[in-house]
Length: 383
Image 1 (tube, rainbow, N blue to C red):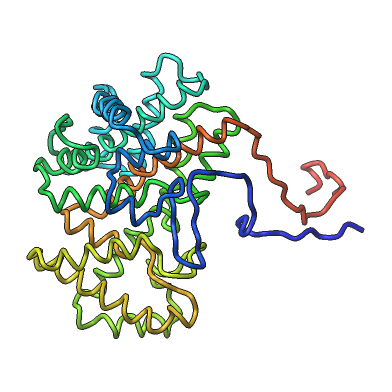
Image 2: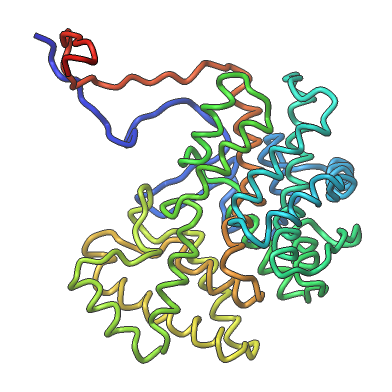
């Protein structure tokens, strides 16, 4: 008689590979990219430099940085065929469906998409890092039936996203906020979407196919869509003075409070701490009444949840809880939150593809069969 094996549902606690890209210390609430703390990178670096660090495994020299940024800026614009598809889809389709379709189209403009040499792979990753923010911005523009705004080479990648989306050059504080969010979402070890990217890459499919897989995985509300769900909850609270009553009743009804708890973090998500500090600063910038309410509700909900469930049950705020209010400070519609996640996470996905192909092995897990065996077949007339 066969003994049933131990089954780790959702692959929880299973190590599938080794990686030098990032480390998440869930017990102590720490995150490092290539050994650099997320706090240092968020404070001192920018998205382009972080992308270089993730891909190449080191911080660039001044010359390397300038060459890398030049490559990104040269590739930010989109082929006309891709713009036309985005324009047709954006008013009627979910923005993540637009992202997935437009990204998959980019393979048509690669003369050798199946080339998996290291330099060729890195080149494809750089192309996608440059173009995905433009796809996200174009999706936002066409959703509102506005015209496409070409990228401005005088702006950085994240700044350009905001400019192409709103038509307004961001000020210094706005530039910092959007760059912060791109940095914080760039990489997070083997989460669901990164794992799905690697499953596809392990078959030796091309970079575009692997990236499209990641976008499909990121669409789910338990992963990339969590920040939108958290903002919906904050909007449902409506008034800061309703916060405690809403949260208390939700907890009594055993409802899930979106934006709290994490599969890995059993302490305060370090990314959430960083976003929270900028939300507090945003309150000093005379935000709109709508945004001011969101920020006040978020901060009051956070305090109550920490008091009730933080130390007691290890349920702390994660980045998704504060991301929505911060995006609203920038005037970004909630439907674009996950496309922004895609645009920033491409750096991490691409880094993992590059690393995995150094020692590729087809991902093929097992599942334990629990159904019957040797069932007699009956012709259709006898069923």
